[in-house]
Length: 132
View 1 (cartoon, helix red, strand yellow):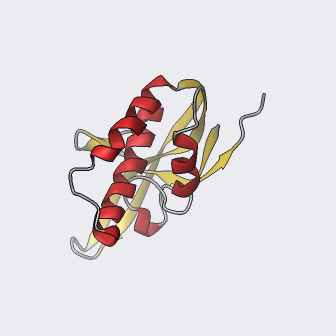
View 2: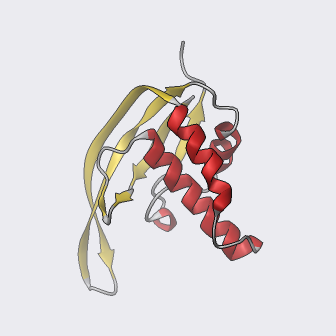
View 3: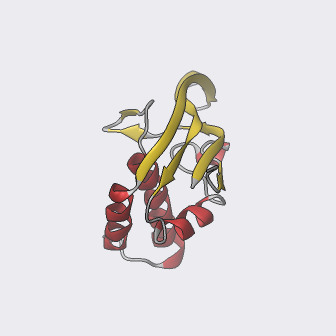
């Protein structure tokens, strides 16, 4: 499975920009977004224990290729009345292994985007079959 980000990806790890995300980081970002939306709109339990099997499956996936490049962007903050740095990455990754549990989540995630600033269009990706 190959994920190719068509808009920049902005993930944070420990409160800081993550400029070299792993597949687990990307999976965690997607599951977090799904969880927040399901709590907000679907009445799901706030605990989110449903994510644990997916995270375990992500730990078992083998990364074949990972190509992320840092990208320095800014956006205008109406609250701060200035341009604010928005560090993010472009690129994608290719993974293999038992993806049966994760594939439907990533297929659905193409409509939701991943990471911070998704409302500004960041984190949009396409899912492709990996070239053999």
